[in-house]
Image (cartoon, rainbow, N blue to C red; front, side):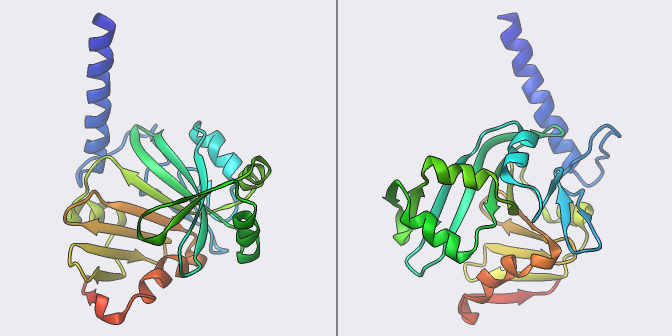
Length: 230
């Protein structure tokens, strides 16, 4: 009973600490590193966040760093888009608990082979399909570099907090629903997805690969998005 209460109090304390570090005035202790806003950009256009160098670190290396085995799947849509993602349900980095999705750097030819060799295909909503990879292709996935990270914090972020931690965005794009806005930081390789109804989402890529974040929005009809001044 006593141990249960202690663990419950400890969990609440850690959540409170994580929330405090996000606050504009919060100052992380010196021992904390690999925080979400600590993005190291190199001269060759790559970046490192959470100890992961996007475009260079393999999924196997990310698994060792996060100490969690993810669920790896290929997702396909009717318009031909395919992507392999590794989903980490719960990661804890420097006191922050979050979910994380790693996008793997397979080219189109490789993605087609993975799709054709898939063991099972499940149909999801809106024509999306989830493909279960073979054991051999799961091994290939773990040897493939991570080109993008999607970070879903448990803490809800407001505009002042994002500006405090990341600075003013270079560009804002508001989606048609007027509830979702993308804050672009091309020099950091970062898209902060601000939402009026959902928790915010942080998307990271290497700065030299920023089109990976921009192109999906550019493919939308121009009437579906509008520019918003920083």
